[in-house]
Length: 312
Image 1 (cartoon, rainbow, N blue to C red):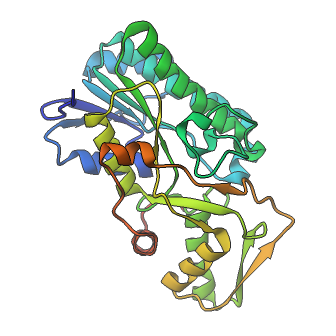
Image 2: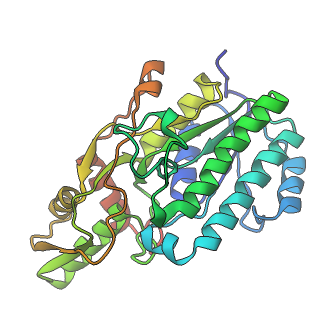
């Protein structure tokens, strides 16, 4: 049966982030009350999380809170990425059970899949091979979150579900070159090169790896769809269904930003997974598909960058 969000109190954990803020915006049209926790509530602290749940009593929860970053950040701070994410998800999920939350959606990441997974990647590829080493710490934490939701569903009958987004971008993104993902990093590099009159911008690796991207507003719409329509143990992929080589992505970003210089590659830096396109067959069969094309989405993300939205 569909889960009706109207009249419910929905807690969005991580509401200040790009994903959480998009979900908050999307929920405004569902007739529900959106709950958020102040930054003073440390989600890594079990007692703090339990106290917040007991005081606010949400009906539904979206776990969008996480410590995130790109290849450099993952490689530099493996302990932080593993520990912080394990604590955040475990505390939020366990406290939801203790406080009789009706519905919970846990958000993972496409990096949960093996480095050499079949393409497009189906949901059942999980745990069928070794992970990509550059972000395995984050991936292991997200896999644990999926399994925790499955465990509470099996043992306690909880209606906890998981969704695995592909690479996300949009308003509220992280444009800090030391910790950002590839698309916002390209936007900032192209913008600064245009502003300074630089002759070129540089990208990591060969530029040949293919990546899939989903605008965060499409992600938020897919999350609300799953909250209302899906109840099952297996996680669900959320993506655009289209991938693009990084070098082509860089060219598209430069066109949108207006940078007319050249793009060089630093082949001493890692490429990461050769290709990572997720199968969207499962959610498509339920009746959902994304609406925002990549070029349109990049233009929206650049607008947000120019307006000072997101981390610098």
